[in-house]
Image (cartoon, rainbow over all chains, first blue to last red; front, top):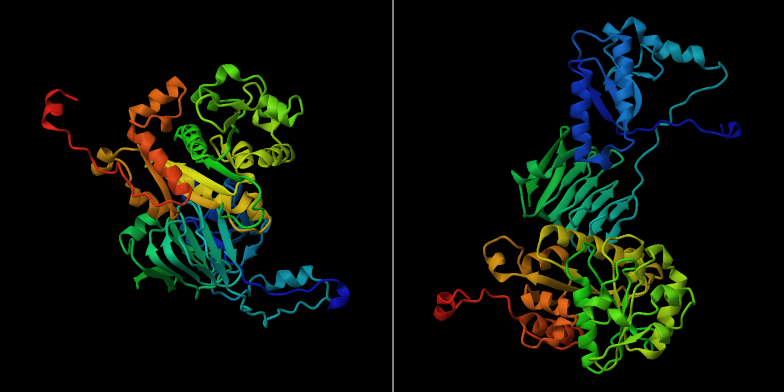
Amino acid sequence: MTDSGFRLKGSVVTTVLLEIQTFSLDDIVFHLKEKIDQVPHFFNQAPIIIDISKMKRGITLEEFEALIKSVSALGLGVIGWRCDPDSLPVWNASVTIPLLPASKARPINIAPEIKEVSSPDVVVKTVVEERLIPQATKVITKPVRSGQQVYAEGDLIVLAQVSAGAEVLADGNIHVYGALRGRALAGVKGDVEARIFCKSMEAELVSIAGNFMLSDALQNIVWKDSAQVLLVDDSLEIVPL
Amino acid sequence: MGLSGDTALAKIIVVTSGKGGVGKTTSSAAIGTGIALKGHKTVIIDFDVGLRNLDLIMGCERRVVYDFVNVINKEATLSQALIKDKRTAGLFILPASQTRDKDALTIEGVQEVLNDLAKDFDYIICDSPAGIEKGAQMALYFADAAIVVTNPEVSSVRDSDRILGILQSKSKRAEEGKEPIEEHLLLTRYHPGRVASGEMLSVSDVEDILAIPLIGVIPESEAVLKASNQGTPVILDTESEAGLAYMDAVDRLMGEERPLRFLEVQKKGFIKRLLGG
């Protein structure tokens, strides 16, 4: 494999899924923009998959292409689309972005297409040994101020406050031994086991593996008290400590 | 001077805030004058190129011939541009240019001027412009200590937090990995009555958000406006609470212990209330 100058590997990336239920382009763009404006940094250049499998009436090629155009114009990167394999529209081959296998379904439908485009002597092997390698913990002893951003490849420990307008991100867990007033995003590479711990929950946003919650919602659960944030069955739980 | 490293040099103090109109220039004038009154040779530099105000507050606007930018551009010498204060011995002002913009300042030029000043002065006070852009970054870049001027309201506190982040990351001390800039919080325009009624943040609210040591609380006072209009630093008005509070802040800056005062709502006496005073 090394002779070819590259290596093909399997990789898991966390993306945002835009699940269309009813198609009204103006409504979709309006509400999507509203969501993006709340957390612009989170959505900036974020990869997104458009899922039309929940649509009852189906969608025309023109509508679908207009949707891709509008979503891209909002600064998101459309990397693929998903559809119920049983109701695949007739125009599916005309779409330039890749059709991804439906959630939890095996990629039987598109497997023959791959064979057609691959040259027969290249063996595509999925590397399954790739695992999360534990990274060193980053320790910050001074306050993280408004406008600052701290990222750790492993766990992040902040021994001071995280001010409003500041952002702390980690591939692993985040511990804040002070007030958490800014944004905290744990498991940013998709680790659903990551957690956030803080001494005083006053956050603008908390997120684990892309599932986020804003301060409005947090205020009704735990506020100005110690708390942990974890992911249980794809939904965030805020638990007092 | 309590600083490690280049001990023979002057201590450079930046007066900064992020937000405009919170009292940076008033505080620079008052604190610079206060330090000079303590017998230390002090210069206050106006970094607000294009919007010079320090000379007005110090009452020396008619004596400005050459300015900071002229010195950087070698169009004048430092001794030509420095204005000696007529009231306070050992106090000098280096005024800003009114006709140039902040791009006229360069790191090399500012460094050269500061190095020259450090030979003669004990303290160099840098009066920063508002904002977090080039002018403000230039004023704080060489600082050993920072006085962060904050009003007790949320936007001012947020901007101060932002500037504290810049002090930690974009100063010379931060870039060279030296001991970080000393940070001092100066709360100005404090109105105990409005704090009591919940319209303003209290001292402890602001301390809690910014988490840096408090060097003084200056009460909102008509004496400040009066002093500015007369071109006299308010610290010289020893009758006013604001003047006394600034003197306390200077004492604390010099390492002395002073209890906080003027934080309580003043109860008007019966006669005063009758007279509507």
